[in-house]
Image 1: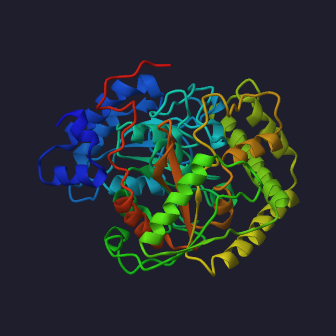
Image 2 (image 1 turned 120 degrees about the vertical axis):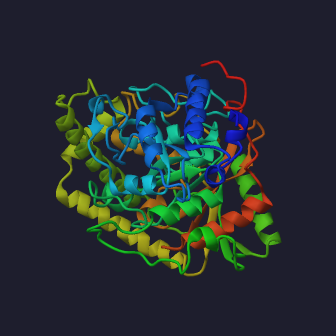
Length: 486
């Protein structure tokens, strides 16, 4: 098998080759490492290569596991993997090595995935681009002058360029869906509580963040969710589950759905005409597939919601910086922190407990308002982000002339559709259904009722067949000649 053949398969496809003895996990690992050497100088997505750990994991892999022997990468944020670097995208967290797996990492391993390296993240995940000072800018394989999105931009760039078919990602305001949109991938943010965060986090970002992955196919997303879903020991809650695995149920024909669609933002943020056009074309396809489509959107009080976002994020950044400093022994200092993130640290440090409780209450009020909207609709369709992928440097977290509030507003003006569903906890997915005239991916977001990932995945599978995306390939790809680093 060569790199072109390797990159043509999704995760399930590679695992099937392992099970039929057509390829070995060791060969797949070598191909992934070859891919890193070939394209990472251009895209700067992979931070650490873990060849020794991968070799040990291959010795123990269960070849009956659904992703047996499939190379895999994890983002250097939140998820814990034994013996693996975990900088959190910050100089203050540099040289941190985690001593033990979190529950989710253990489930990734049990699924057969072989950890081969780590990927970039913006500092503490608070950016819609991936351009941390500690690593430098991560670039979009479709066009190196653009960002692959954030905060899971390293994972997205690695999957889009063919290094691996699946990579870990997490989402506290759009950080799975934004890079999926920018990089031409499938990015599911599961329902709050669907994927375990323990034992080292209770509810990340006070319940607005969740963990999962970016992939290239709906079936990889569905089967991976089967492998990792469910509460861990001591979890606050347990969600209802489907009567059969998602990987099986996505084969069933989705029932006719009532789909709301919108291209308008609650904040009044600008939406690019090409993103609007992509929604209109998808609406027409949905009609042809037999679904009822209605232009409608949920409405809520924007100013208080924005303040709640600022307060929750900054309070958590304050705590994360304190924790990182305690782990490394470094002083909490702007010498180690990017300028806008330092402003967030200062803002968060001035908040009172009552401020955080009020922010959590605001999100609960918004969540109930939005739940009422979804009493009438199965799905809400919108653009994932409001524009085409940002150019490198447009979302600069090292800007000393921006406040914590201004930084938050800049992020969610760029990505005005995603953050709401972190507050409500609903499942939300970005699908690579369109591309711009200049060849950049345009993702469309579909959001479902709370705990109803199944409808999203079934409709996603239907659209994957009606509007196929799997064979689209970026300019920087493991099967192509290397592009010069910018």
